[in-house]
Image (cartoon, rainbow, N blue to C red; front, side):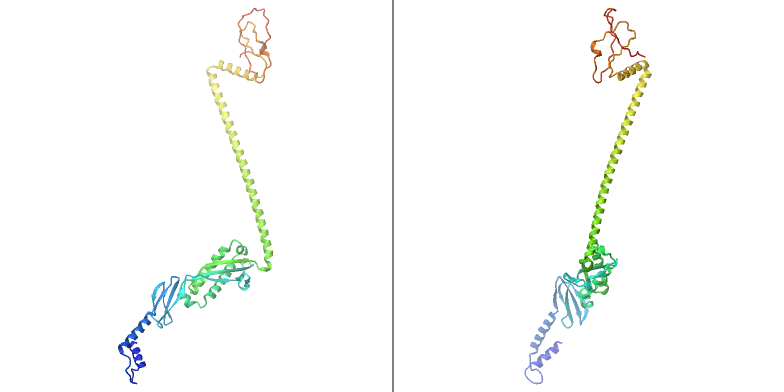
Length: 352
């Protein structure tokens, strides 16, 4: 190649048969070397961090280069094309607000209703070689795949879910289906996100649909209020029932304790009775009479072995207030004569 270059230079500068001194061979060689060096250095290139380089040899794919300082054989042997792989691209389906495209936005749902849905797709290049050689118009390909995937997902979803809380799931399923289709076509495109911008019933029935939705919300509100009232009443009933059960358990425990105490007291009295029957009978008799005659204005006198008259103080027969206690007068010694006046004393009984 260099020899042909030198021969051409000699011919141009008169070094051929036409005569003339011509070009010095060493100078021609130097010029040829400089030209070759410049041609060789033309293969040096830089790939930016957000790019991926695709190198072709005589038009056929050769390799892909990552960011940094790179080299390829000079043209026309090898050529390089850089593709931005980190930049996000966006495709809108269904038109924009105020300029809707019904042919793209009207879709049939799984319950045979029609929804007017507009959405956007954000995508980026994942494989620069596939993107350059397999995709002619990336925006059109992504748009066609996105519309097809979304129609398939909407066709399996009910209208109410699309309009309310099912949008997130629809977006996820549509993005996954789009990615599978793009990978199958070998486009080298990665779907970053699918976002539903708006979803409404068709304009002709939107007022009626909103009325139905409002009625449904009112019905749900009434159901929630009824459930709240039911829960409150049930909780109050449970609280009352628990309180009654606890009160009953407390009363039962009290009765059982009292019965056990009475039984224990009876056993103790019975033990004392077995040891001293007469004394026990006497004590029981006195306690019973005291309890029976506690509020009676009477004096009980044991007249057994008593010969002398018993003189009681005048205040014994005064009216007693409340729980007057029965007083038992002791036998008085015969300190006065037998002719002293004696007050009548009611005798209620004698010791057993």
